[in-house]
Image 1 (cartoon, chains in turn red, green):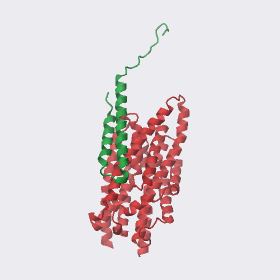
Image 2 (cartoon, rainbow over the protein chains, first blue to last red):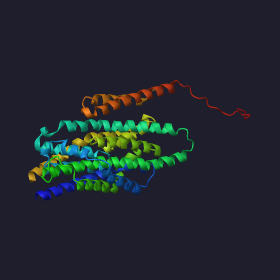
Image 3 (tube, rainbow over the protein chains, first blue to last red):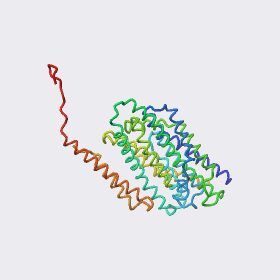
Image 4 (cartoon, rainbow over the protein chains, first blue to last red):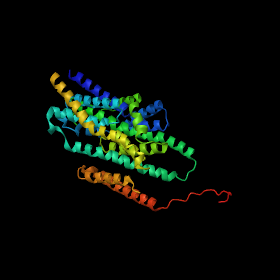
Length: 331
Length: 69
């Protein structure tokens, strides 16, 4: 029964990774699709490949933070992890249906924290880990925004003397393939590790691994395959919001936004900080728009996005709490 | 002519300052970098807006009826 429960929870964790992939697919492909660099089908395949390939580039620092940095590791029972994942998946599906680019990462943090508190009270929360995550909830989009604006200004300054606009556009369209690949690497590297961290916590809680163990290779590969497949499934409802509703993007803007987001994700993944790829790329896109003028940003759309962000952790928390209540009654 | 980006960037800079004491010691430099970067961006945008406000508009050249400039 214990092994069966572990298999079920690992399956749900990989399902979360899959949902994360198609919920966040728009982040990776919205800019290349809106600037018509790639067709939607080619764009998702491109992004999915680099989501998968990220396991060759990044370590497992983010996974370690997820496994032992949010709540006391002892409280992470199979029931808590299961309820937390259901909370995150439920919130992801709700916001996916509404077309809102919310953070799968913060949904996971909110879900795990909510389920853990439902079991053991607020004392189980680890303030240091949550503080680090909380600070970067604000910092990661700000960093993405600043870098997006700076990169855009640098690119515009470097090419302002060229008169052949068509040739410039062709160069930047090719450049977007590179920047989109870099962003998908960062997305895969940061987001797949969160699922790895959850699976690692489950394996330790069920005594299949000793405390402090490294992430097994099969966990690494399965998490990256799941997120890649999720990306491949696409998320068209969110593509429209990300690609053109926040601000109008040209290829040069796409290169600037994706490069800025990729740099931010590379840094945070290396530092073991689980951040929202959605927040980061949204901040970068806003930064590109703001490099022209603030009115270039459709603040009404950005405002809806911000509200969804604010409600993500409480929303996932609530769903996880309810789920844990059901799990506790049934078990 | 005022540029609202100045206010936006100053608020972002203030966010970095407010997060400095809250951030863990290993990553406080990120909060500092955010605060400084946005302050510099605010300053640059302010100076750019001032320059545009004080630069007279270029005269629009129209052709004369006899064709001579």
